[in-house]
Length: 346
Ligand code: UDP
Ligand code: MG
Image (tube, rainbow, N blue to C red; front, side):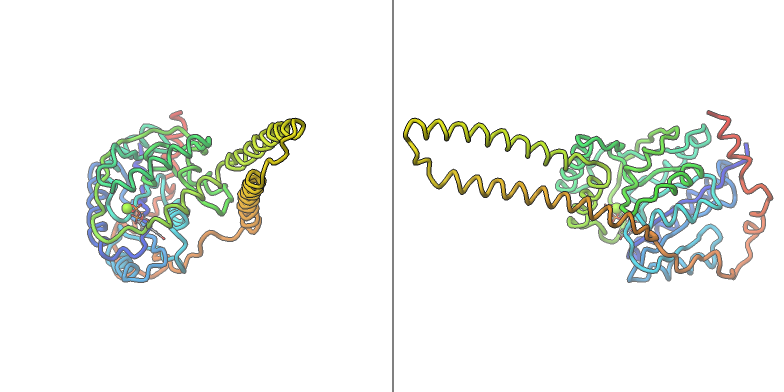
């Protein structure tokens, strides 16, 4: 079997504190894999700078100039983790047989990239990294994350439990993912929809190595809400059901109050009236708000805006060093032979 070309995609937003360490460690992994003939020499690490305001791009760019394993992609502005990741996947797919995505902060165990590759070589097209526990998280993050998976599951969204965006995808899977034209991105929900042969690999999640989290509570809630409304219509079903329930309740109460009237006790009072007005008013507001949410999504989808705009691709910049690895890249078949092998596998 010809060795597959691997690209490791790393979205980075203001990661200057951790980036040097990440570059070093990922390279070590890559070199080991190449040394053991598990992946091809042309394998790379693609750092996507998601409009950072610190020295992130400078670090990526400089490393890319002197290091042939490193490639950099600078987005023109901050588009968020999911979009930056997608920019990386789509850019990497041209040159890669398989792509691993991983966060810049080294929270995910880079050693299991080897397991990803083994699975890929066995013919799996999507391999999910699943964290065993959440000991390294704060109590709060643990609870909110757990609640998130529960709610998503209840709403019928097919998520891999405790899997974030640490995964391997085959070239083919990424190409298919590209056909999902939606603007509201929630990759964790989209990847299982691809339906290719997949497997899980378990690992212990570590602490963030340096720098601060880029997902404060506000972003986390927004992310969860996006995930729900992009993948499920159960919130709106829920509103509909509540509407029905309150309708039948009001019929019952109506009957009850009529009965009271006929038995001569008409002073049913102002309280029940005002309460029901507020109740119904509130329900209507919620319903309208939710409908508005979906219409907002439809509105965004119909625009088909590009999800990201590439500013600089370090591949298009002349190189300072001419490493032999770069020359050996053009071997004619561009790794396609390998793809054929993996297809006959199934
Ligand atoms: N990230 C990004 N764009 C953003 C926010 C985050 O590319 O707007 C990247 C970030 O650099 C990191 C990954 O997404 O590599 C995950 O972010 P972080 O580790 O801060 O999230 P957490 O692990 O705390 O949920
Ligand atoms: Mg993190």
